Length: 353
Image 1: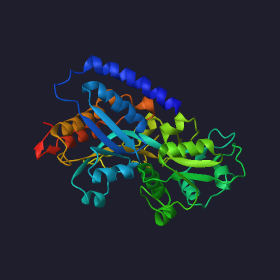
Image 2: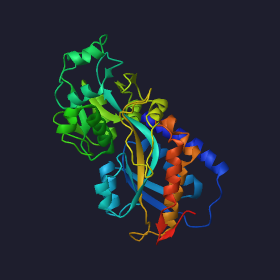
Image 3: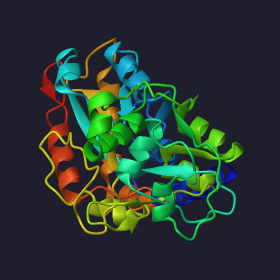
Image 4: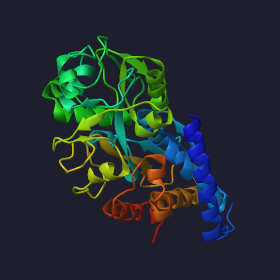
């Protein structure tokens, strides 16, 4: 994790200098404290953002990386100011809560990280990945893996799939992809934040999955790309709809978002048919209540919540996403998000004009 810490601290210092030189002074109000919880997938990015946001007007943000499912539960229980989630809420979930809005914060990739001795460039396709996690392909030297990797020295060893033990937006993104590329997976397991994987080893959070893979030979697991990079774990090239073997990058993730974005920004971009697109790309969101007066929250807290989200959408913050191995939001997503923020109220009165 030293790489994550060094990268984050470098960016925090750099961005703090930008903030001090280009932001107005404190407005005179008392500094506020916000709390959020949820996805671990964007946590390295959020660590940079929240630390630097504190430099603007002294407002503090505490965020617990407990998984998307836990974050949504906390928001539903009205004990946080916002939830972080890599999975947008379904119509059913939204019907069970007061009105919410989804604000995308960045784009990222779920990678298939592995621990194989002397294998530096593994290639996989979607149906093969689905069959590995379904327990239908169990050996690293299975003929289907060999066919995609004829030059690799694949061992006659059992594949150990690694998956999330907690309710996870990363799991949702991964299983959403598998459901699109494998009819067998779609029929037997489907998509969701929590899935009953038939085989393998469970671990909590993206850091937990990355840790198990880095320490255990013959493993294969899905994890946010930054965590694989930080622990120097290799990850596979994945064949996309165009037949190209693609690794995640700011460019290949951005290409996955080339299609239309709905007004509420709830959209899946896995298995994109765009040329050069990495096939397991996704948005990640911060979710807030449209009516901000709940659980004794003050108007100032509501205003700072919107300040934070506008800050995340700013060019200053979006431009640093590639430095922590994410990708910036497309212009349309930012425009829709600002429009949606203008629907947020406190006691029924619009906050942003």
